[in-house]
Length: 432
Image 1 (cartoon, rainbow, N blue to C red):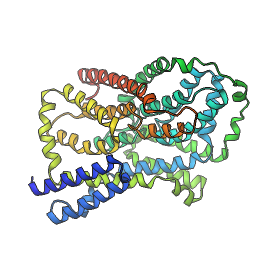
Image 2: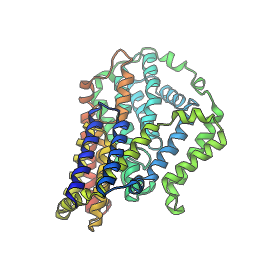
Image 3: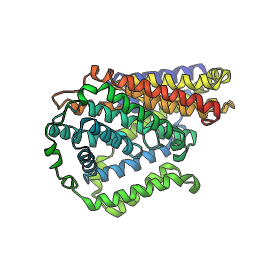
Image 4: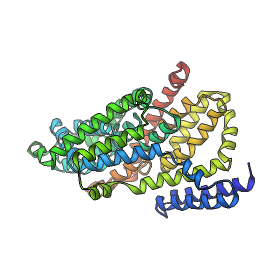
């Protein structure tokens, strides 16, 4: 490893991530500037070039994100999310506890297939309206939805951006995530519901005041385009089936998402400019730029050096290594964005694999840690930030104190369940 190349790449990496975490500059701008700097310096010092930078980009991840964004952008305009939330709320007849259970459960379920941030963006405003109609505080409902969306997203390959990254790097399929992490998520959700009831027992004990107003809402009025909704739900069903069998068909998950997006666009034929305006291009550029930045570290030999020196931990015992990654990932995800942390960890774990270390438990530990750890603080996950933002338009906004007295305990619960799962998985070969 050339010292000057390593020092330059580490410096660019630290400055880039420092700008991202400081939030002084928009994270996409910081990542893009870091990527350009890494390429320019790499060419100058001879350790990185344009071809290597393009090769560092994981186009399977980018394709998966782009395809799902297109599908969601078409589906959300139909009013489906609002309709479903109203129907679920009416089923509860205004009972606060059943309202929390059903809305949070609905959010968790949808977050296993669609991006959890988009799900919160759609469901949270409807939740506030329902709470106002019934006459209860929306605060516990919003916190429960954000937490459960983060937990639910851990269960599948497409439920959370870090899972997409991990699945692509490790070669895990949709079924791999569902079979390994699905049971862990299910247990965590069930225990989380019990803890939520305990934590919000005072708020949930208040009787609803205007149940009649809730039941009088015509949910069908929320559907602005039922025809398009039916078509896009059909497309979504086809995608789910393809995800379940994509390994047998040798189709990368990114290609499956793009197949679904293309099918939906051909069938619905929406206005292209409207669809494109709803795609989070800043997120895609952010991912591409981070791949390039981390690729520079890899080309300079820094990540190989880190993997070599971390290998002793895994060689000393797989269980301690997996638990260390889980809890470090959870701690980092509680205070910083879990996406850049995950991208930085991918080549490190892959490097351990090149040393002959069985990295299966490490990948699953990383997925569980970054997924559950984000619940600890209001800035630990984007879904949390959205929920807090929506609550600020109500009479009882979510404060840091509100979040810490509930989300922190839920994050610890999730990480505790995950630790037990890792212990059992390593012992019985389930996570290998």
